[in-house]
Length: 121
Image (tube, helix red, strand yellow):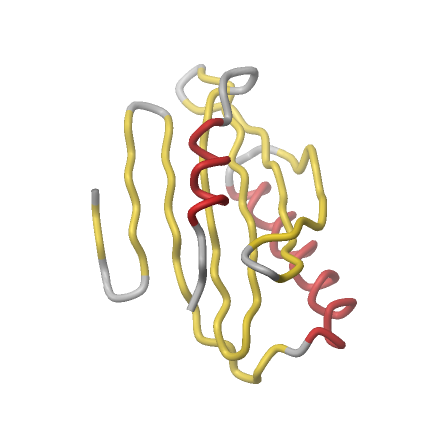
């Protein structure tokens, strides 16, 4: 497990889980959801491109009492077909980025545990 001031992560083989926090320039308010979704959709497309993959699922989910945006990015690394599930939670001046990586077609238990244990600040 690795910890920094703004993140905590654990990696095992090709699997990974992490939570990273970012400070927003302006406080997020729920009425900004539409604009936030557009921006996050663009960010997820850029992340997928960096991985030489593509976005395979997009959804809004309830997490820690708020609506969050979640993306599944599919890509291949060293011959392994992987999915990175990234969930963005916006709360006040904080953005939380929850990430879990798993082999495509395998158990998503780590993602479920990460999401169910997340409380945010």
